[in-house]
Length: 94
Length: 100
Image 1 (tube, rainbow over the protein chains, first blue to last red):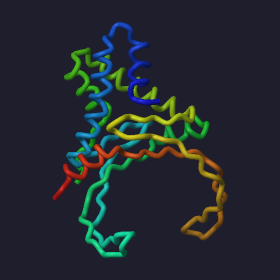
Image 2: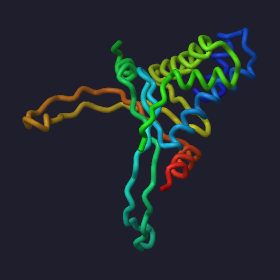
Image 3: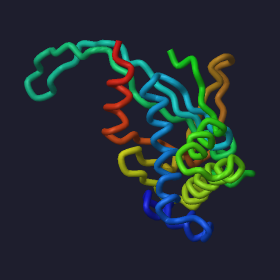
Image 4: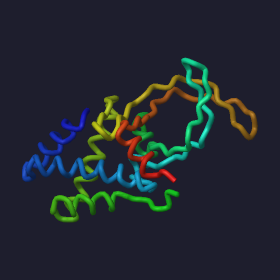
């Protein structure tokens, strides 16, 4: 399923909404999650999962082609942990 | 870091501000979005949200695990797990936003 299919499903179920508004609703949800993580915040959606930011320490990496050492700066990466309910549903429970 | 936590309430509040539906309907729509994504994943589908990321379901085979405290061997049943791969855009935004 891709973004446009998700929007279409919701538009079909909500004929009183303009397609354009459904697009805005779906986009707002994903933008809000990304914005929160860009501020270093967590987004916890019980039953679905939680988005958080993890810190990766600075390290000395290597250029795999030349074997040359390069210093890699500390950085922050997005992380998602599946919620219990969804994890159970994926495995046919609940 | 990561002191503040957003929940469904914050997402529905954002939808409420953005679209001007009632708070109640905004809340229901947030739930609907999550439900559709969950249902697709439970059906084994991949959920690909451009410029956000991709959720995919992977099958893990059975293996012998160990209770780290007692050293006791315990069988781990085959199971399905969900992985999220953030888009480049999200990775860049999170990296840039959290630069110290």
